[in-house]
Image (cartoon, rainbow over the protein chains, first blue to last red):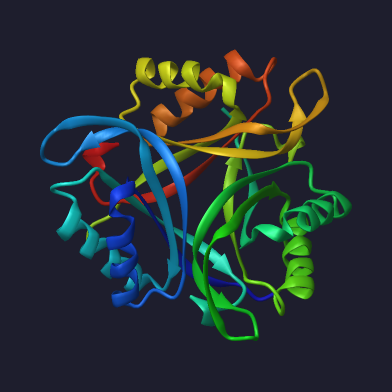
Length: 100
Length: 100
Length: 100
């Protein structure tokens, strides 16, 4: 079974951003994504306030490393200052690289 | 703390497949799995249609590499053509290898 | 884009433990976490019973390796014997290490 390495980008943020993030994903060229509802606690942007509430989402995108970095940069520029958001990257192995 | 390496297999697919996938997991020898509800968008099998809807699931199984590959092969053979499904593999460290 | 490596600790356990785990996370110094509702099946501690039910949670914490190991040790000591719980560790890349 031949596997191919891609990047998994995971973003945890406020549920109210879902529509905007999906639009960003489309415009930047992501071919698929998965969203689950989440809750949690963290530290909020420059406002330095803690946040803790139900209305979070956990968004996953698998793609080539270059697109993962463009997405991460885009999210950082547009949302880090004003929204609760964390993101992290991992390598994953996939079967059908043409899908990602 | 001694950690052991296992494979984490993640499958994102249509919620209607949950019962069949769980049956597959049992028959192929998986000892545990985790399922969360998800939504998202992707590219659907050979029909080449985009899919986007609420009723997805995200299934995780941690197991030995050989079983992870058998599961991935089985899912590919039985579901890739007719269902929306992606899967990916990662290494994870576990404390109690006998559970996986 | 400069990325920094941190540990992602994922815990899947009974939903009834959520409040206690969050208190543990606070006391041991975690700065953020994400929780999603999950279901699944596994093998339950020393009682050697299978468990399968809706009421699971999937908890994620990103932090320095030393804290991830303290958390894993703490959970093992306090919950492994009496509760259904699995946990696993992975390396992840993050943008803002000061948040974790």
